[in-house]
Structure formats: structure tokens, C-alpha cells
Amino acid sequence: MKLQRIIFIYGLILFFGTEFSISQVNSDSLISVYTKKIQKYLDKDNKASEVFSFTKTGIEVYSPATDSAQKKFEYGIMWSELDLFRELLSSLDTKTMVKLCRGKSDPFPEAIKTEYAGKSTSSVHPPVPSKKSLSGIRIALDPGHIAGDLEAAKMEKKWVEMKNPPVELIEGELTLATANILKTKLEEQGAKVMLTRTKPGISSFGIDYKKWKDSLFVRAVAGAYERGDIDFEEKNYLLTKANDTEIFRRFFLLEDLRERAKKINEFHPDLTVVIHFNVDETNSNWNKPTKKDYNMCFVGGGFTDDELEKPEDRLEFLRLLLTDDIERSVEFSTYMMESLVEKTGVPAAIDSNAVYLRDNCMDTEVKGVFCRNLTLTRKVNGVICYGESLYQDNINECRALSKKEIKIDGMETSKRVGDVAAAYLEGILNYVKNRKGNR
Ligand SMILES: [Zn+2]
Image 1 (cartoon, rainbow, N blue to C red):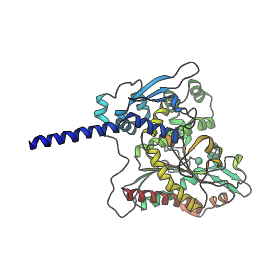
Image 2: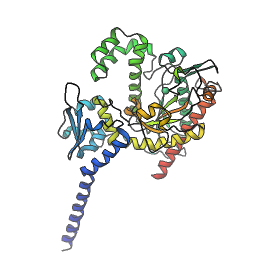
Image 3: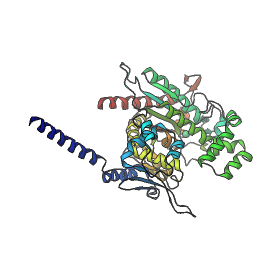
Image 4: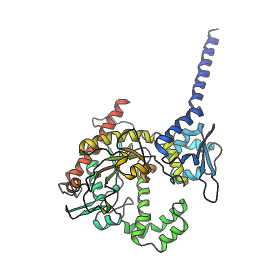
């Protein structure tokens, strides 16, 4: 009698337990959650419904309609295999994922489940007992751009040169100096830090543009053509007609960004900080000072009109939709923005401050933090803050930034660059401290 009761109660627990788990994968509630998220963070121009559709069984993905063809079924992901899909997205590169998903209308095969379920490298690394506040934390720093001299900076269109006041700024140098200062401070706190590039003029491939062109260019063009990033005409133009500057601007810069994303993802960081210094976009040629000065940070999302055309784009959209990378990046960037404003004394931007903020970004709930679909915010997995600090061409900033007051890793830079590095350090420390507190 007693045993029967135990079995009965155990049966009840099983029954309700199962009911509970079924309600957790209730397709209606998932559809509602993901529809809201798409509207809030991801779909700037209301185009997502043309390539994604939610059904009782899962998400259907379509290649978009063209002038000559209707939209076409690409693959389906079942609600019941979302966890496995997330694992695959974090374990495999996008090219492999595109191949794996193409034409899929049934669940992933057992072999895939056996190989990948529960196997992905967690972005949360086990805490190492230590007094240092960043022990065990892996941080990727990406110093924006490449140039180490004015000629190269002009080629990548990332320089400020003025006669009055006499100023010469190379963004690629400012970002690298910031990253180097920050790296030293983060390592002092116990963090493991990786820089995507380490020397002025040297790209993320570890070589300069000329060496890249001599060694990797032809193969890279073939790869981009295979992915559908460039068409047959562009491929031929690049290989036969384009001059160095054209190859650099039209092709190499994007390849360099892809390499940065690859390096970062292979490092499996807990946090990624992309470092840029901004300019006033309405100040043509940046040869006279502006009065404007703002700080802003970008996270993933904000896909615009034509940014869902390629299979890779749709997969990256799905990754951002189905993981909490955007939400955690907004949280991280909140701390980064707070310390940027405090340490630099420069306000956070609002969407009316720049045309690209209004036309290419979606507001988040945090002032100065925007969803923007940049190569790195789209391709880097995990928590990212893409910082655009200060306007280099601002009347005060251009003077302050061009001073040579500090020496770091063989480079001379300004105290103002030090302010920005200090702001990022404080943002990282506050975020990590707060997350530990909430654990
Ligand atoms: Zn930049």
C-alpha cells in the first residue's frame, strides 16, 4: 500500500514535471518573445518577415524574392532543437553552418546531435580563486583600423589633418595606443587579454597590406566569390583592373574585419571591446575643427533594408535572435557608456546627433548605446561593446589627442587617450563586479 502511494506520487511529479517542460517550449510563447525581440533590437526596416516565418513547429528561413524569382524556402529550425542550433552556431563557422542548414526541413540528424549537443565552449570561464578582480576573465580588444602613418591613414580614410590648429591624427594609432594601455591595466587585474593586431601598419593577418596582397589576395578573392560576397564582375575587376587603393578599400578592409572576428571567436572571450575614435560625419574632410563631441557604443542588431540578402546574414541574424548576446552586450555597454561619460566629460549621443544613428541604428533602452549591424557586431559571438569615443575633429579633442605625453609599447600618445583607456577599464571592472554580485 505504502509503495503504491509512493509510485502514485512519483507518477504525479513526472506528469506535472513533463507538463511544465512542454509549456516551456510552447511555440506561442516563443513566437511572442522572438517577435518582440526582432521589433526591439534587430529589424530596422521591417524586412525580417520577408525571410523568416514562425510556425507551430519552428522557424522557417527563406532566401528573399528578387526581380525575377519568388522567395524560396532555405531551411527550417524546429523549436525543439533550439539548444542544439545554438550549440552549432557557437561551435561551427558561418560557412559550415550555411552548408549544414541548406535545404533542411527535418530535425538535424542524430550524428550531429551526438557530436555537438552540450559540446560548445561556454563563454563563462570558471572563476580562478584570486584576489585580482579579473582573474579567469578573457578579454578580446580590437584596435580599429590599421594605419601607422599618414599615407596609409589616407588610404583607409581614417585621419584628421588641420592647419588651424595644427593637428595630425591617425585613428589607427589612437586605437592601438588605447588598446595597449588597456591591455596592461587589465592584465594587472588578472585578465587574459588578446589584441587582434599589435603593431602600427600591421593588419589582423599579422602582415601589412602589401604583403597581404602579394600572398593572400588571390585566394581571398576566390573565397569571397564562393561565399557570394562578390559577384563574377567584381571578382574579375579586382583581379585584373583594380589598383592598390581600390583593392584596399573595396576588398581588403572587409577581409581584415572578417579575420578580426575569426580571431576573436577562436579566443572565446568573455568580453570583447572594439576601440574606435569618432569624427563629426558632417565635417567634410576633417580639416577644420567642429564643436560637436559625443560618445557612443554599438551592439549587434539593427539590420537594415538589404542586410538579409545573403545566407550568412540570415544565420547571423538568427544567432543574435536566439542567444542573449544582444541583451548582455547592452548590459555591458551600459557600464562602458557610464564610465566613458564620467572619465571624458563628453555626453552620450542620442539618435538625432548623427544621420547614421537615425538611419542605420536602433535605439536601446540605454542612452548612447545603439544596435548597429556592423561586421564585428554581427560576426563576433558573445558579449561585445563597440566603442566610438570622442570626436577627433572636435576643437578641444584634436588638440588634446595630438599631444605626445605618454609612452606605451614604443608609441607616444596623449593623456586624453589615457582617459579613454581608463574609462574602458572602469566599465569592464564595474560590469564584472556587478555580475559576480548577482551570481
Ligand atoms: Zn574608426
